[in-house]
Amino acid sequence: MKSWLLAAAMVVATGSFGWADGLYWVVGNRATNSCDIVTRNPVIVGDIWFADGPYKSRDDARLARSSIRVCPKDDSAAE
Image (cartoon, rainbow, N blue to C red; front, top):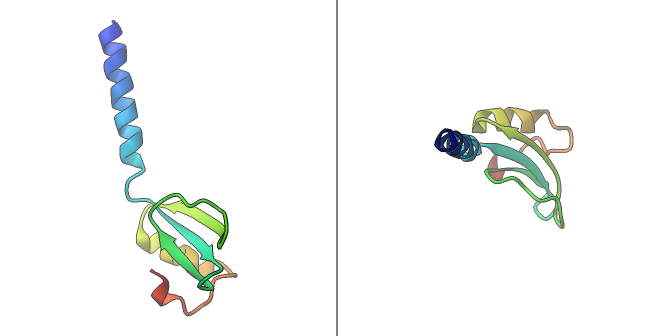
């Protein structure tokens, strides 16, 4: 019984780490006056003044960035 519980806990832990792969966030960057798409969960400090996400794909993050009012409309270089 204990071995089953240990195996189940390991499967859940492994699945949790795998779920975090491939996620994207949109962050506002004051230093560059742009909205960047990043692949790590951002920390809101310093020049990073907002974050939105996570999104499952880069295309979803691009779509979200286009709908965020504070993001400059011509932001194609911020990837």
